[in-house]
Image (cartoon, rainbow over all chains, first blue to last red):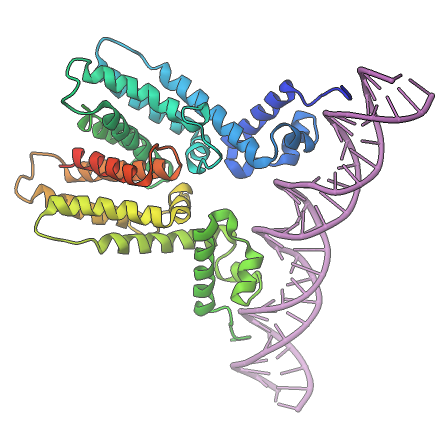
Length: 193
Length: 193
DNA sequence: CACTGTTATCTGACAGTGTCATATAACTTC
DNA sequence: GAAGTTATATGACACTGTCAGATAACAGTG
């Protein structure tokens, strides 16, 4: 071995945290390697050493965001009424997006081109997995073979939730926040299983 | 009057066209005032004189994008089967987004904060208007008062289409393009009126 | 004709960005 | 000690948006 690392896992975590805060505060464009590095007490070279560059750093931030998102959704209540749970999941979805809009935009706004492994935490599919489970529960394990396909239904609901939330974040929906929430719930309910 | 303008409507249009092409080719970050200006045969000052800055130029590009999008949707066939027309509209929606993904991302990815006039072409609500009409036709003019609210149904369908398309553009959906198209149609059909 | 006032465009500088070649520092092994 | 090896630091490069100040081009007036 030679010179010991000081750009280690701890620095990596610190950079990731700082970058996440910057994204949450002002979106992708608020992430400047220089300010990031100085906040973390290192030089910009650390980003290149630990991540490979700005792009990969942001990829890591997105990955982290999806992890937190999945945790937030996973925390939604699981009662013995799976239909109600599904609605609750939808509300949790919107809650997260509205709580950190810039983060949400970065997570879903950047095309994931870099070799996406199926079911890697980076892909956002684990998010989908939570939903898929909830849908499967709501459809019941009984009538497999006939009836609606859980996979398709889950995708439909994901699309609906993500779409409505995105439109809201884009500022394209009329009315105040309360009226928007009501319409969101209404759309979810009338589109449920 | 004083010195005659040469940064006129024509230059404005040229800049808009060039900027649109840049957005379509590589998203917002592909728009550099210097390259833009040199391509249009002017200096960067023209952008400030005609638009006010980069942000406003991009706003204008988005506005133009929404106009084209609305035109594309409006061109969808109108037969005497309003349900089928609605599905066709959904397909046209996805078609446009996949044809110009970077453009679509910029259109729906930037929060529209600048004093959005209701029903100004910039807001994307005219897009929604085309859909709303189609939904109203599909629901029939007969059963007003009871039955589903056209407004709510239209919003639900917009959310669904936009959501599924966005997820696809984000690279979050599995399968090849054909399988994705089929699932899109399936979700649309099963969520229709 | 020259001069003034007014407006529009051009120039150049400023402060900032990501990137990375090259120099330097810090360790292990001989 | 010296040599070898690897990690970090520095500084330069080529960009970027922005805009104050210099310059150019006209209309109107004397």
